[in-house]
Length: 384
Ligand SMILES: *[C@@H]1O[C@H](CO)[C@@H](O)[C@H](O)[C@H]1NC(C)=O
Ligand SMILES: *[C@@H]1O[C@H](CO)[C@@H](O)[C@H](O)[C@H]1NC(C)=O
Image (cartoon, rainbow, N blue to C red; front, side, top):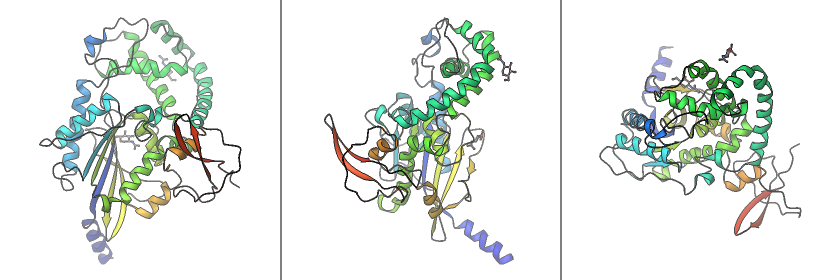
C-alpha cells in the first residue's frame, strides 16, 4: 500500500505541462441597440459605442492576462512567436480583448493578434455566423417548441415588457430584451424600477433560448466541431510545431458550444472573459488532457471531466471521445450542414476522411459555384 502511495506521489510530481489552449470570451460590452421607448443616450454611458468593448471589459481582459502569466510562468517566459499564438474572432471587442490579455501576459513584448478576414466565414471562432442549414432547422424546431410553452407561461411578463419597451415581446424576442437590460445593468446604468423586477426572469429565459442553440452532440458539432478538431490537431502536432500556448478570443456562443462539444456543459450562460482551458500533460511518458473552467477572478479554475474519463484523461481516450465530434474542414461542414443539394450523378468513392466514423461511406466530387470551387462530399449514405 505504502509503495502504491509513494508511486502515485512521484507520478504526480513528474506530471509535466507541455501545452495550454485557452478559449476566452470577450470582456464586458455595450448593448447592440436599445428599445423604442427608451430615452437613452448611448454616448453618455457607452462612449465607445453600441456593441463595443467597454473600459470595464478591457480591464477584465488585462486581468485574464495576469492570471495566465501567473498560472503558466513555468511553461512560457516572454513572447516567442513560435511558442505562442494569439488568434481572435474578427470583431473589435474580441481583438481588443486579445490585446488586453497580451498587454499583461507579455508586458515587455510586441504581440500580434491574428484574425480572419471576415467573421461571417470564420468557422473557427465565429461559427454561429457561418451558414449551416441543418443546425438552423434543428434550432428553429426547438425554438418553436420552447416558445409554445414560454409564451403561455410568461404571458404577464411579456405583456409588461411590451408595454414598457414598445416592442412586441414574446419568447423569441427575449434575447433582444436581455441584450439591453442586462448590459446596462452590468455597467451600473440607472434604469426604471420595473427592470429590477423582471431582470432575473429575463435572464433565465435568455439562458433557455441560448442553450437550445447548442445543446446536443449534433448541434455543437456543426458549430464547434471544426475548432475542436483544430485544438486536437495542435496537441497531436505539438512536437513538430513547438507550440506551447494558444489563446483564442471569441464569443459566448463559441464557448457555450465548445462546452457541449466536450460534454462538460452545465447549461449556464457564459460570463464575460470566462475561459475554457485545455491543457496537455506528460506523465510517465504518456500524454494526458485536462480541461479547466475559469469563469471569474473570484473562483479558482475548476477541473472538468470528459464523460467517462478522469481529470487527467489519457490522450487515446480523449481522441476516441472527440473523434465523432470533430469536423476536419469547410467542405465537411457544408455536407453535415446540408448546405448544398447532393448532385444526382453517380460518384466515384474516395478515401474516407480521417475524423469521420468508419461506417459513413462518403463520396466526393468537385462542383463549381460561381467562381468558387468546393470539394464536396455528397451523398452521405444513410447508416444501417
Ligand atoms: C418570474 O418567474 C417566477 C417563476 O416562474 C414567477 O413566479 C414570477 O411571477 C415571475 N416574475 C415576473 C415579474 O414575471
Ligand atoms: C465554471 O465555474 C463557475 C464558478 O467558478 C460555475 O458557476 C460554472 O457553473 C462552471 N461551469 C462549468 C461548465 O462547470
